[in-house]
Amino acid sequence: MIKGIVLAGGLATRLPNKALLPIKNGMPAITSSIDLLLRSGIKDITIVVSPVSAIPSVLNTYYDRPFKFAVQLAAEGYINAIKTAGYDPQSQIVVTCCDNVYDESEEVIDREGSYACVRELPAWQTIGLTKYDGSIDTWFNIANSYACFAGYAVFHQVHLIDAGSVVENFNRLKMTALKCPAKGWFDIGTLENYITYWRL
Image 1 (cartoon, rainbow, N blue to C red):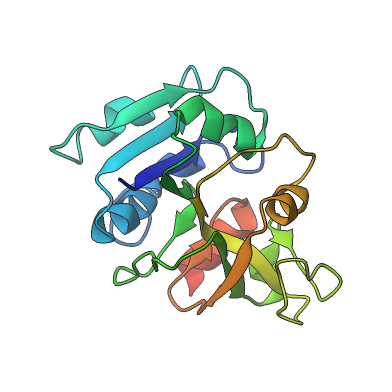
Image 2: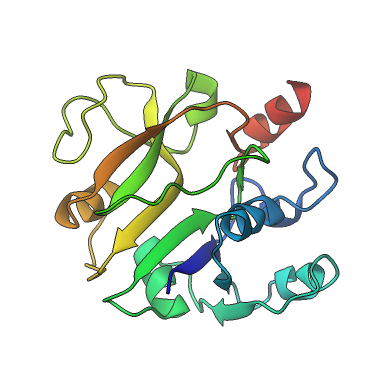
């Protein structure tokens, strides 16, 4: 069974309460990631939250289905968050971020092998994201300095490794890049990005 994990346990120092900020459909931002998973047929969803998060109570007012919540006691990165959520190393997991806004028709593409969703974006949209360029081609071969890891990552038979960066982990996990269009997608993790999202 495919498991979905939504990462929402960080400190959100760049934009407090970003997961609960409204997006253009009137819903909290985190619902875009949840709806992406549900549209893709993923029903087993765990949301990683901080110890004082209001997310569980807020989501209960928007959905008539239960979600699993895992409390990340300290903001120690996405590897720790995935481990906190609990997972079967032999199963497939899809990891999304609470501050990503997707086109309402987008679905997770299921392909064999581990891959990450990569988008080519204008410079203003890549603020705070993990950028890639041609020098990191172990798993990434799109020669564009404005391309970045964004959206979601799909892991098959995951054996998580503690490493210092997203790049290191993806290289060690032999991730394969999946180039996706940027249409309708935003990262609203900073105040500048959130304001721009509303202006466009």
